[in-house]
Amino acid sequence: MKLSNFVKLALPSAVLALGLISTPASAATTASTSMQVSAQVQTSCSVSATSLTFSAYTGTVLQATSSITVSCNTNDTVTIGLSKGQGDLASANNPRVMTGTSPMGDYLNYSLYSDNAYSIPWTDLSGTNYVTATVDGEAPSPLPVYGRIAGGQNSPADTYTDSITVTVSY
Image 1 (tube, rainbow, N blue to C red):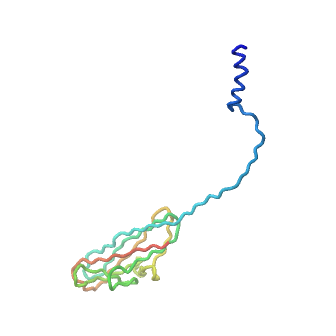
Image 2: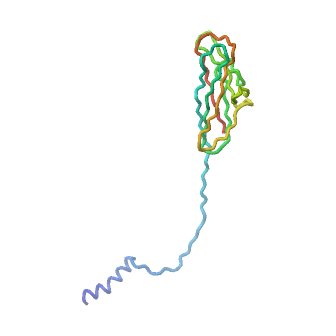
């Protein structure tokens, strides 16, 4: 047998044996099901605030503005409350109290409002005048805080401070 005849006869058998040439298979039996896919997006919010800094108090009414910025990952309605602060005599419904650095316990009353007419005191979440806002899930939502120091207070010369906790409920 010539080598070329051998190759012609042996090569198809070798290819078939290696599985390189497929033969038609009978129809396969199959089974299928569906798979549910789900995810839950939980609302997540963050809050920041700028300082409320009054100019020098000389006994006349002072007003100042700061802002609170709320950012959430979804469209949501949030409520924002402001604590009474750290002054012992403070009230969440106003006045709040800045205390001096003197050990004498000097203080300076001030109030925080949610409107520029200074008529709606901004309370904590347990009060009735917390602020409700809708955040859009894309851009931060800044909210103004209006501060006022009433005139006629006889506080000695000193530096007065307070710290307010901003609480966002969502």
